[in-house]
Length: 152
Image (tube, rainbow, N blue to C red; front, side, top):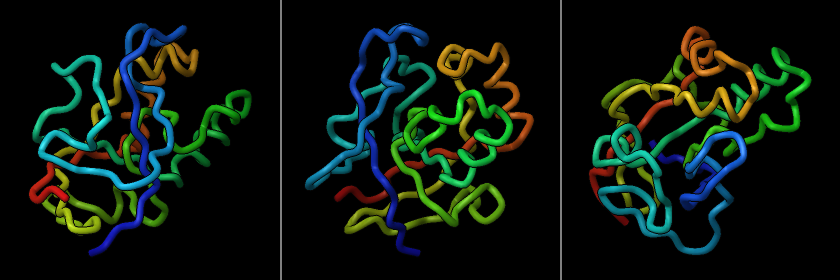
């Protein structure tokens, strides 16, 4: 299956609510290079938990942001693609219709889902909701991670 995601990258920086983090991603433009560790130019602050060959890319469905806007209307301006530090965001792909092991074509590259995303505690600081990461996990709206099986 071919995917056409919105793509985001970020650099490590000191943030007001998340400490040192690369959670604040911006839309990537131009030609991108994808290698075994992800998109060139994208960084992860805590490599013990983020990044690496089996966590090279993070995907978060756009549909979930609408759910969060309904649940936390006071935060509706926050809940837009890339808010949770993902690299890829699409419509039509959710935890209900993608599976560990699925392989997708992204241009010349091939990526494979490796695991569900484990929501980071930094989401609590980002949203100001003390247990947001746990709520995200309980709701099953976590997104997922990929490995790169063929760069491009």
